[in-house]
View 1 (cartoon, rainbow, N blue to C red):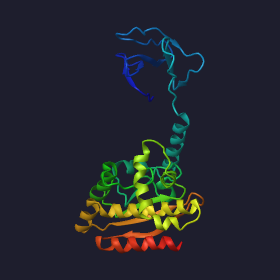
View 2 (view 1 turned 180 degrees about the horizontal axis):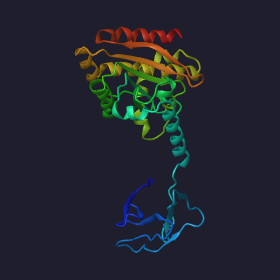
View 3 (view 1 turned 120 degrees about the horizontal axis):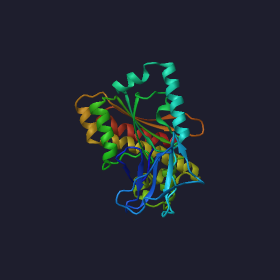
View 4 (view 1 turned 135 degrees about the vertical axis):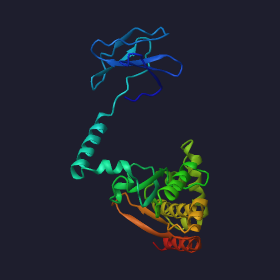
Length: 289
């Protein structure tokens, strides 16, 4: 079971006690039959079972402290576990050695840098199985030179996994791009989306020619991908890989939520020398669409 906050397992390993960061008891879990929760060094030893909204999961039952009114029992997402079992069984039925093989190697040819949007699942939309694509995702599929998370994924993909293709994939209807286009105030994420606003400012004249917001939104989604491909190519990681003779191509794609199809934005770079020419051609091509 997964809980928020801290937890302590009693010495008899038959119960789990969950406490807040201040040390106040929230609830405990233990076997239903003959279970007795322990409360070392606190005044919250007396527990009562939840009689109205208790959830039993695989033979365990949640209890809540009498003198804590704000905490509800945690719930296991049983449907997701059921889905997982069905998926694993289906994969094993089709390929009996699939998981054994997958556990011993990871040899993807592709690194996917995409948006966190739940409607754009990387492996599924290109028909690849687990193990066939290394994936990094963030809001608005950005490649920022100070983002160590993205850079670490890029470095690991190139230097360790030896991928041959880096795919930056955006999508039409991206909420992060729309927020940047509109100057929406969403809180902390505004600092992240500032990078998309920089793309908007850089291509202001291209966007200003479009009369409808939907057109500007679509175009900014495309231009953002093109800029992120350029950012990938300008990292020391990719430049050094090219210097070493690593056969590596960086692609810019965009996905349509309305029909499930990918579109190549014509931004495919395989060396430092190609970058400027590919970038200019891709930007011009967006004007023709």
